[in-house]
Length: 113
Image (cartoon, rainbow, N blue to C red):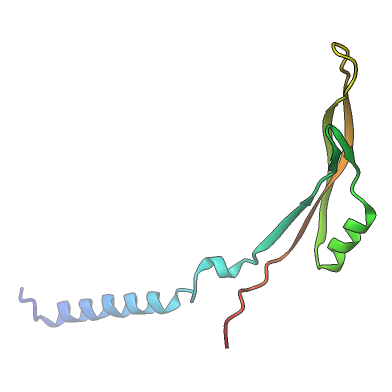
């Protein structure tokens, strides 16, 4: 059988056409662009002195909301505070504070004009 036979040429043309069709059917761009990218921000209690913490203030949460952050979770955040005291008598106190997790859509990079 000759490589120039009509059957081989037809089979080669069909395979080439199928490959071209499959390539054109592929989605444009990368798959990563199909899903939104999120920024995540965690707001935790602040240490105001050694081993002393303060709850998150309401104004911090309001400021995050004004900046477009959406609250997705609040959960207990346990800390062990080692109290300062007379030598040999240091108490360890476990306190529970609230931690907040926010998200917002990541801004696409600005293209220079």
